[in-house]
Image 1 (cartoon, one colour):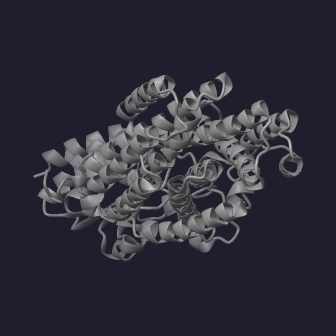
Image 2: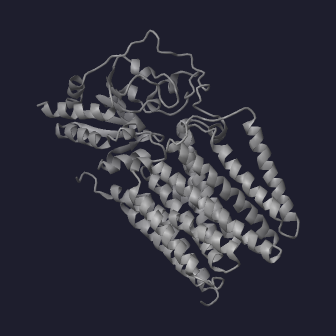
Image 3: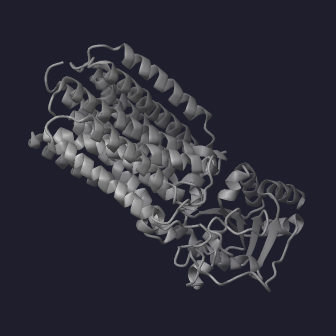
Length: 97
Length: 464
């Protein structure tokens, strides 16, 4: 059982280092969209929420899972949509009005 | 789906997230990066629908429709000035989702009397703790930013000791829960309740000026919470994306702390901006400021070769970004050059000021970071400070007694002349006197930023 935990820790650690490398390349001008976009990515919890909501393990699981699906989907859709809205404003060509 | 196929598709989703972040390294590619990331998310969701553990789809579908509609509505309705609140709220939702998933997994095992394995048990406890702290911490940050509660630090003697005690109690309860073979309800509820309280107590002593750090940090927590959920349900794509988000939040918190010359510990436990923080003895007595009218100020701007605009949050509050752009256009039409000097903590979250100016159509290549622009102030004819205060306060360089001593600032004081647009002589967010305002080459244009800018624009138009 502990092997899967260790494998998870390995993945987590490597992904953290990858994240540091990637994020350091994001210019300061895009830090706000970066945060809202990262927020959308953390809405990946929806995957766990869906499994809990749909697995039919009694009403408690279904209720908690459905609530989690709603919250995580707000994170996902709200995060991506608002990031897109901001990034559109940055896309205008420099100098062009 | 054949065994292994789902895992590979999840991996593709994770690759989409990684490439999406990579494309965020330039404004030109960022839009497509964000969409690629969204496609990865869609893929992950679709793959999950084929999961064999899912028996019914009604509640999932209902939850998705409701969540998507609410999310879309928020994203459309939010004003760019309110972006920090929105991100705080979304962080909180992410934390709540992790808390609920962890809680549901635990309650299921309790209900069927199944013994959890050691690693699942540990990660459930962690996702409860981190999810709950992220939820209530974010809600407090939201309330402070939305001004539903005072931005001032709320603290009382023994608060930190209390926090430490709560944290130790959570650890003790979790260890107990993990060590017994069956799932017990009372430690579960106690851990949830204490973690929710801890989230509140951790954020209330942090002042409004330090919110950029708190939001970044909570962003990081929401990522780590997602990763913990990944451990609970054993899904690598959650672990990978959680780790990516976790590192992004930590880097942004570090950048913010460096920009304020304070350690993370100091931000989190220092209760900065409470009025008691001021060790400075410098007061404004005996000094006088030079006032200027819009005509003279417009004259100065109209004949300047280089104008560096220093926007602060006051500009955003006055909703005057568009007027600044108009003013900049007029100066450029007259042959002058305009640059915008953005201090890292100019807004209420990292990069906030850039978004506000981009919304007003200021091209992003005119926005300069502190390090890139500080050398240019010497040859600037006018530094136009609009609604900014602490980020141009020379006391940060010269007065070791000042609470902001050592904070990197914009060298507005080395410009040939300085025009400050300010509502009145009140002090900044950190509550400190600013000697730049008493500098002989500084002239003050008092009034609401929007009004003053409108006057400057119309004066500049009449200038021939």
